[in-house]
Image (cartoon, rainbow, N blue to C red):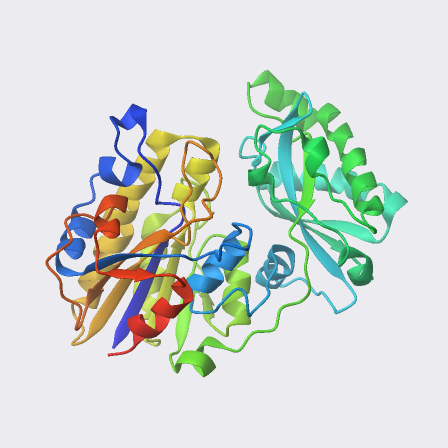
Length: 396
């Protein structure tokens, strides 16, 4: 049996006045997902345990069939693994996000979708100052970068941080890294305020774009160790995505990490390339995971129209070709599931449940109407732990 998982991250939402009381999923034209919903099964699941913060790494781990309460993972080390950066047990890794701070509040966690070229130049400026030699910044994709603290694992273990999307429109002072060992991080963040005067940010200001005038350090944790996906479920798989977080998680689980030209993790990612990479991979593996960050990015930025358009492109350019390919198989299943909800009204991850759709072999129902929050709430499957869904999805 061939299996495909499509993750339209952050797709689940709440009703919006600007959409006449509908959610983005309800407002979007989704003919393929609608047909699958009518023939498949809908439901809800809690991907983030109530006692844990609403972090993407926990939600993705849960979606892939691993209980995040049992298996600890952190954003920084996973992204370093996704980028192939050498890190040993004595090092600490933090996500280093380029952000926009205005009047002491965090205005934009993407720094106006700063480009990778701009980000590299800004981080090079900070690395040129060797006052904190143990802390080195590594440019990634746009605002998503890393900070490796060589030999800092013991000190970093006592530091507590907050992800920037939880600080949007709030004073940054109350959410800076804290705890014994945070001093070098705070000094680096303070030094980064000089980026406001960099030529790149002067030009961005002239163009009316949000400046990358600060860095935000977060997501530290130990190097993760997890049992492989094939060992756990007996299925060889692959993953295609545009973010280092899932690349790292895929490598950690022994999944093949696929390359797709133009896969950025942004709203304008290359949707057809992701679908084609998944279709090609089905010739050699039995499970492919396709992750699309665009709906989540649109929610964090408060862009309703962009979110609706991203959902429509996922339906037409990813789900449609994958469904056509799967239907050539004698037995197949398709799971469509956001790792978590990201309501536009809050611009933050929702710590509650998410929704899902399963269609294919031995999956039949007549209760679904659409792939949306209301239909999922009326669906047949409701799981307190999303990590339990993988066993059901994979087994006959």
